Image (cartoon, rainbow, N blue to C red):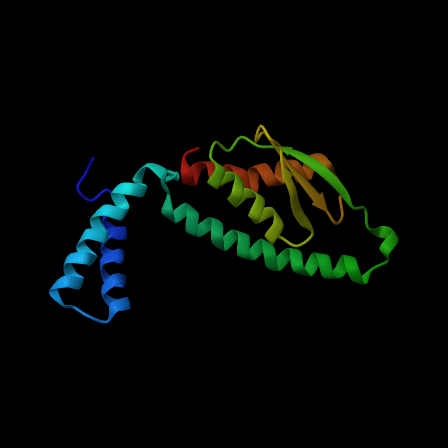
Length: 161
């Protein structure tokens, strides 16, 4: 085991301890050092390893694309709501997902929920399906393909999962 298994956390603990006590006396420095070394050692086994961002530029492009999709969907939803209610065709769909990490699934579900007109309802226990409610569902296969290509595929590339 490394001496500092979580160096950033150790530094943060050290600084926060000194700031909370508003003192840089020898005793507080020794105690801050003790906490900065001991606490990360004790909790290092409890850490969840999240996948690393393998393609940061793709991640930035993904965020910008999602922001554009949110704006576009806001206009589309506003037009749907202004129109006659009987034109709406709400429904649930099950989207098969192939994202290999919990973080990736969370980002996918959050992206779907952030986009107006759709909301993630549930992830199956085996993490193979994402259930989504759509305000207006014209073509189920088209929506599934759109979610898989537009959101799931880049997430898999960004995290390599």
